[in-house]
Image (cartoon, rainbow, N blue to C red; front, side):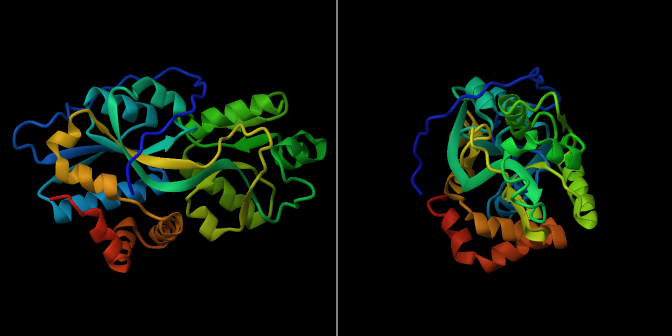
Length: 296
């Protein structure tokens, strides 16, 4: 996969930017063997980030320290050199506002996986003739079924920023509440609704293990407010490629087909991330070995 420069679509971002603090500088000193990677506990990001950590520590001389932080803090941390890398840059739409602020201060090593999708998700038992599009949420009968609520995730997520845009575009602000919560709280709400066969709309994305557990579908978005297909990139601080060329080559070469990733995520949900990562490496040796091509 050859790296290519990309054009990015800029979306408006609401809310204040969180200041970076509490990370020691990640700039590599001579002989520094620890690489600091930022992450957030999103199902896809957790698997990919922990897979990268495992491979780096098993097959290079470096150690990896994972630093949990909100997505805005990660972008700032990499831009300022407080973090070495982040492996969850959703582009071009989802994180466009964050990217606009830091794109000249970081290095994009290219996509880790492609074809990801954002949107509003409903269980497949919700009748399509009643609710199949975000525009259908304007119906009084649908609003009553949903108790005027859209279940969201953490407020700093790009998906929530785009969801606010969708609320406005479809005229839903007077009729619905976009509820902020963690990703775990969102899936817990979905699980309760599934158990009771109740209607629910959640902010969701693929890849995600929930699509392996339940029959779900995205609501149509005729206004295109939630963006098109996304690619998720590895972004590193300036100077990282020179400081850690072997690891930079690995992150540049690392690419996981979406179906493989989603299957691994569901396996992690059923077992553990450690077991799912070991199984992934065992099942895809040629693919993993190819990521170390030209890595020294």
